[in-house]
Every structure is written in structure tokens, then in C-alpha cells.
Image (tube, helix red, strand yellow):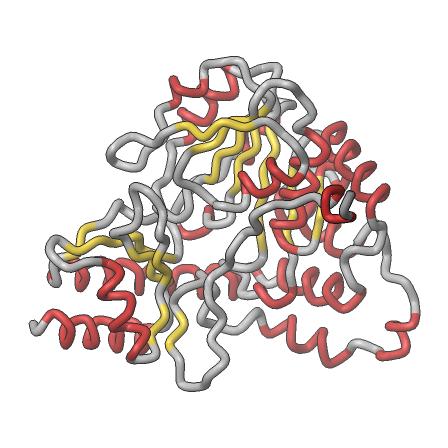
Amino acid sequence: MSWEENVRRVEPYVPGEQPKCDNVIKLNTNECPYPPAPGVEAAAHKLVADRLRLYPDTDATKIVDALATYYKVKPEQVFVGVGSDDVLSMVFLTLFHSDKPVLFPDITYSFYDVWAKLYDIPYECILLDEDFCIRKEDYYRPNGGIVIANPNAPTGVFMPLSEIEDILQHNPESVVVVDEAYVDFGATSALPLLEKYENLLIVQTFSKSRAMAGARIGFAIGSEKMIRYINDVKFSVNSYTMSFPVQEIGAEAVKDDAYFREIVDKMIRTREWTKEELSKLGFTFPDSYTNFIFATHRTERAEDIFSYLKSKNIYVRHFKKPRIDNYLRISIGTDEQMQILIDTLKEYLKC
């Protein structure tokens, strides 16, 4: 018998390419093109190196309190982790412990099925319709939990809050997780529904609209009971997941609401301009409520466009997966970066 027979084997999540060269326009991982709030830099300069010899606050009190104040909930309703990936991993491990399958769309964040396989959770992928929309009726079935990215990734499609509530009403015995990584770019959060549904959990991140992907901060908001369950599992795995420096700068990021709204509004304006320019070039796409556009061209193959852009040091995301292999996911950069993208596409299309 080989030792390898006892190894847990999974096919890991594959993130967007991280180019190592300079002079790259990086539009493939949905990062914010602008720096974090000024208070983040100021807090970073004030950090005392001597504190690094001490363990951080296991409860991450400073950032939890800042989030609770901002979203008008109790601190006991907030769970924080090392990016929303860490938060969602704890959610899968804690809340999905049933023989029934967890349900999520066939086209969505591709980490969901990785966690399900890793933790031996049965799951079922529900087909989106031809317009990449969720049919709420498809979730009226026995299940061990539901996960909906809203707006969805990589499609950018937003599901109306009334339909989220409809799914909650039809699944009172299941945890419904709404992954709102992109909600700040024009969509509506399900946070108001928390007062009515104890089985709802909302997950968000600092990586997109708060311009802090490198800090790795994610959080969940739900009922006190649900957050307590997740914390119990977290503290059974690793009590010290979030470092002291990250807790400090994360709290500062939440405080500067004016800057947060400024950069979000700027990215929305750039996104709308980019939509118009892509349409002129023969691209079509679902309407996006995110910081990216999921586009296909009427005549040109996505893989060919992807390769051409990459040869020009412009990185976008191409998924070699069923139903979406002729689409490109294009993150929104600065106005200057998006102008270069459009000009390069014109060169390729000979417009």
C-alpha cells in the first residue's frame, strides 16, 4: 500500500494569471485600479514593528466593530476572514453538513465546487438560462444549502432582491448564502433581508470596491447564532487568521466612506463608457453590475482576441469552460487603461 492512497486529492481553483513583467495592463483579476483610502496608508505608517512579536486579536475587534457600525448591525453578527475565500471556506465547512446537495449555478465563482469536493459536500450545479440568469423556481427543491453570487461572476448579472427573497421564502430550512463581492458597483445588497430571515448569510470583500485585494479581508454578516457557529469552527482550525497590521488598516478603510464612494462612482462611469465602446466594435454582453464586463464578439473568437491582447501586454480573462468559452471577462481599469484596450481592439479588428 502506498502512502498516496490516503491523500485527499482535489482539482484546485485556478486564479487569473499574475504577470511578472512590467508595463502590463492587468484587466484579468477584477482588482481596483485605484489605491486604498488615504487613511489606510496613514495607518500603515503608524504600525509599530514591536507589535509583530505578539499574537493578533483573535476576535479582530477593531475591524469587526468598524464593519458593524458601518452596516448598522451588532458586532456579534459579523465574521471576518482572510479574504472572502477564507470566509466562504469556513461557511462551507460549518453550515453545509447534510446528505442533500448544496445548490449553486453552473456558471458562477469556480471556487464553490472546489470547496464542496474538498469537504465532501454533495452539490448540484443548476443551469442558468440562455441569458445567464438564475431561474428562482429551480431552487424550489430539497437541498442542503444554496449559494448565489449576486451580482454573479463571471457574468456580471444581477438578480433582483425580490427573487432572492422568493428563494429564501421557499427554503426556510436551508442556509442561503449571498456572495456580494461585487454588490457596490450598482447592485442592491440583501442586507435589509437579514431582519426577516435567520437563514440568510451575506458575504462581502475588501478586494474589489475597497481596493485592498493584497490585504486579504473578507467578511460575512448574518444572525448572531449563525456567526457564532462559524466562529466555533474557525477557532477549531486557526484562531489567528487575520494579522495585526491587516486589522488596523482594514478598520481605517471602512471609516472613509467618501473616498470609497468616489472610486466606486469613478469605476462605474468608466464601465459605462467601456460598454458603449465595446458595443461599437461588435461586442455583446449581459448588462454588468460589477467592475468587469463579460463580453463576446459577433464574429471573432474570444481565444484569438485574448491571445492578441496578451501579445500587447493587455491581460483579460478567458475561461475554457462549456457555455462561456467564447467570452472574455474584462476588468475595469482606469480611463487611460480602458482607452488603450479599445484602441488595441480596433487594431485587431481593423476598425
